[in-house]
Image 1 (cartoon, rainbow, N blue to C red):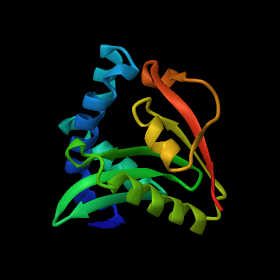
Image 2: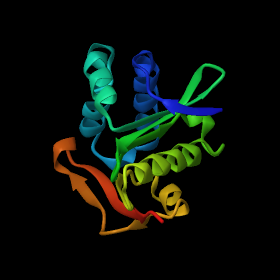
Image 3: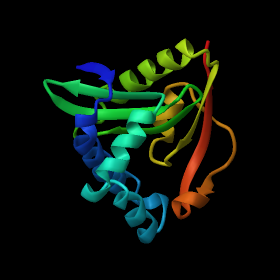
Image 4: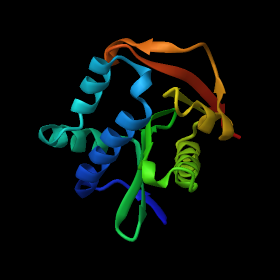
Length: 156
């Protein structure tokens, strides 16, 4: 497996991973309507906007093995915006590798911390990676009330 920078031709597979993973593992984080609206952002007719967003990202990394995209992480030097690993590959160290590389890139940008609005499902993963909760569970106003857990990690 390699961790590499995002390329425009990755968009369709990245969108599929985000949609499927979010629907399967984050369905309890919001109402059915909120979940539906979230995954709509990754439909076929929205791929151009997604490509633009991913290309503008400061740090966007792909986990790939033999041409198959298995996961994606994106954000900037102080914030993970998204981490998604194809559910078929959970528990194989892919998320860890993506976060480790993300943190390395963040340090290169001069960051000494990373914030994340973790899905409730992913909190144990981030805690295992050294992130700590900063407050209680919140609801994202601009994401139709989907719940998240604010977390932070100080980089050394």
